[in-house]
Length: 350
Ligand code: ADP
Image (spheres, rainbow, N blue to C red):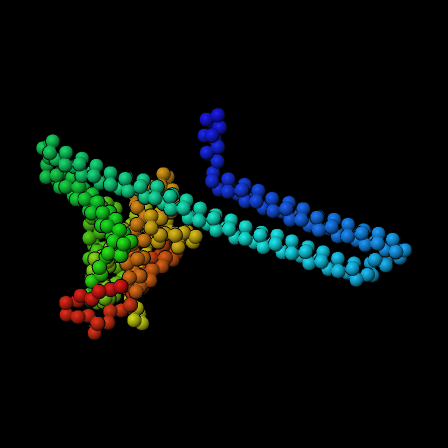
């Protein structure tokens, strides 16, 4: 008996829901059909009664068909039949709409549950591996006499791991602040050209991949922005370009200024983003594919943060395809307006 209930509980909710919808639709179809049958048989009985009256009065039975009573009966029958059909159709439309709404909300719930599960799996992994790396490096340095180059290698690996941890914690905190709107943006005039190059160079030193960059950066491009937010945007985009390009090709960093707009593009030759995923990847916790089979590390927070920060700077972000492969992430900001920057540079942004 208990195994029956266990098996019963394994039936997916959506299947139970569809069965219920089918039962409701079937019941209403049967009820409407029966109603229609009753109307038809009532009409036939009333016509029969009318014919009997004609027979009683010795009138020709066929004259019933031309009588006003017959016309009235037929009219009533038609309007009642139309009412039954109308009711049935309205019911079907409401049931269809309701089913669609419930299915959409179930899908949303399931997506959120899947993303949270992915997030928990990835965050555990993301925390565990740099901590294990740092622990191992420290233990090795403490327990053995090492020569200088070995000590340097272990220290620099431990440093890279701690930077990874630091970035991860920063991203989590930033996402939490964005969520409860407690992040205070302090806008000031930023030289995006030098800031982008600085970030890329720092990432070049600290990422394990040691990736080459092609700089195509226009000099002295200024925007009005929060320095920490811009650092987070550029860091996340470049880190992704490195992470999702296994083949080692150079990542192109392009900065242009055109018609009051600043356009920053991070171009890679990596795995690219499928057309149907282009909207999804900016959602919180969203990662393409399944955590259990995925090779790359991550939390699905990076692009969510980037999009939120870009939008708070009145900018836009989009992703396109690179040729022959890879992706192009492009952020467009309005150009800094000199007169709006005060001497302290502290302007609050919404
Ligand atoms: P994470 O990198 O931690 O998974 P992100 O929010 O930064 O989270 O990215 C979301 C998803 O978008 C990634 O899981 C990845 O599938 C896809 N993605 C992001 N950047 C790139 C890129 N440069 N090339 C290909 N796919 C990317």
